[in-house]
Image (cartoon, rainbow, N blue to C red; front, side, top):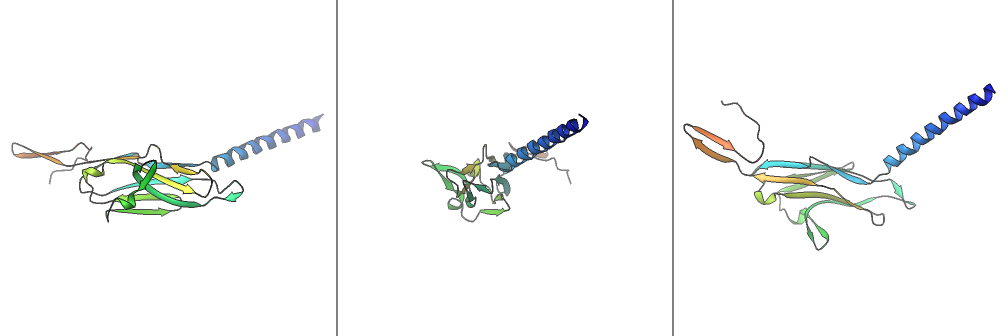
Length: 165
């Protein structure tokens, strides 16, 4: 009887290891996009960077998955996202490597305030993913108010307190 108890214990341990392996594999095969930060408040004229990472299974539907397109957008034309590269002339740059894409916008304008979303499309049928909720960018101007002998600067953004020199 002792031998049967030991083999049952070994079989149970093997089953637990199998379950852990399967759950790890399922997590690896998930699809999605994650962006950081999800909200940015920046001053007019400054530069901002937002970044998204994306994930997809290496193989699905009996074929290798390949990414066909990556882009950022803020608007839809009909139901089709409009790639920001057609909107910004010389003030923005995409940089993508290893399932991570960064959008850099320089010389910010208040009109740049929007929700920025990242999208990637693959060769798999109906496999296009868009970041949700996206990155909310708020661009504001610095306000200056004279108060006696002092100048007070303020903005709708949370600004760091700088020492007076």
